[in-house]
Length: 79
Image 1 (spheres, rainbow, N blue to C red):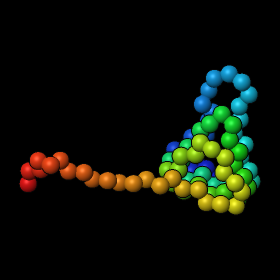
Image 2: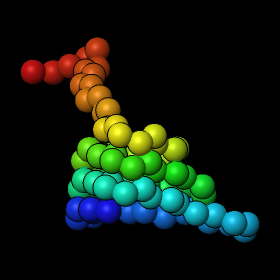
Image 3: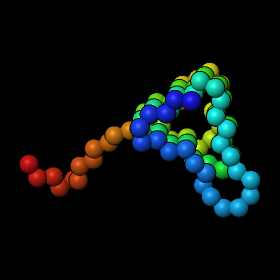
């Protein structure tokens, strides 16, 4: 398991049995989070930077979280 800076791996909290299970050869890039009560990460998975994971991820894949930037102007826009 390789983890870069500013990452979080943790459970949400509350009672009951909880756990995050991480397979072999998993890479978690900078500023990524794996958060949930029961999550299974397969073997040979790469997470892109700033990924947010709250569900199971199968083996042998790359996981990214897509973010969309959008600029909206008001109808009364001054120059």
